[in-house]
Every structure is written in C-alpha cells, then in structure tokens.
Length: 93
Image (cartoon, rainbow, N blue to C red; front, side, top):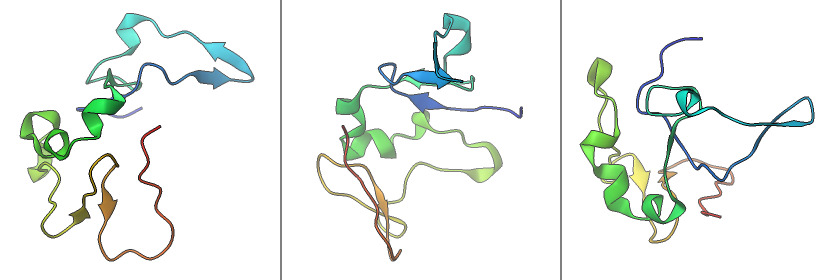
C-alpha cells in the first residue's frame, strides 16, 4: 500500500466499507498510518498549523505550505491553491 508519512485526519470522521461502520484500532492510526494522526478542526483553521515544518515530511525535499507563491490563506478556512480555476471549498466543518 505504499509508505505513509505525516498523514492527518479528524478522528470524528466515520469510515464505512460496504455500508458498515469500520472501527479503527489504535494501531491503525497515527502519522505513519493509512488513517492518519488525529487533528482538530480548530488547529487546521490557523495558518501557523500549515506552515509548521514539523507537521510535514521533508522526504524528497518537501516543505511546509508556501503561502507566498503556491497557496492562499483566509482565516478560519483551509488553504486553496493560487491561480487555479474552478470551485475550491476551503470550509472547515
């Protein structure tokens, strides 16, 4: 299934397979797992969360989010790509 690095999700999200709720064991969650480390909606609503280098894998030269050239930020929303047409929904629910 590949390698997972610095993977995030909100624990309140529910996962269903074939119509049945899937309960995840603690071993199936975390930064290096398919289902990710729990992150609260309030945390991802701040620009500083996205620019904190320790939240991101630096494998292959990757870096934290760049809000100068690549991403746009509006307080209380998720980042959106600059200069991309079409609808982007940056709302945290």
